[in-house]
Image (tube, rainbow, N blue to C red; front, side, top):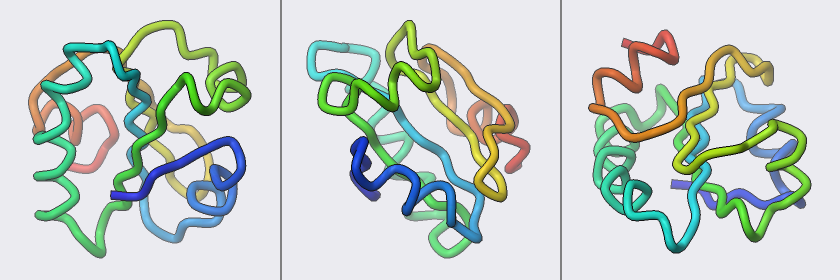
Length: 103
C-alpha cells in the first residue's frame, strides 16, 4: 500500500493508469483499524490491477478539504484520475470493490 500526503496525492492518484482506492483514515478511528486488513487483502489479491493507498486525514488537511472528508474512514475511488465513487464507514471487501465498480 502507498502512503499518500498532500504533496504526493496528484502524482500517485491523478496519473495512475490503474484504478485507485484511497483509504482516508485517522489515528483515533477504531473503524479505520478494523478496515486495515481488508485493504491489505485487496492490495495483495489485486496487485497490478488496483492501486490501494492510505492517507491520514490529519497529516493531509488540504486533500481532506478538497474532497470534503467529513467522516472516517472514507474510501475514495478513482479511475483515470477522476473521482468516480466514495463511501464512508466500514464494510466488506466485496462491498468496497462493488461500490468502486471493481468487482
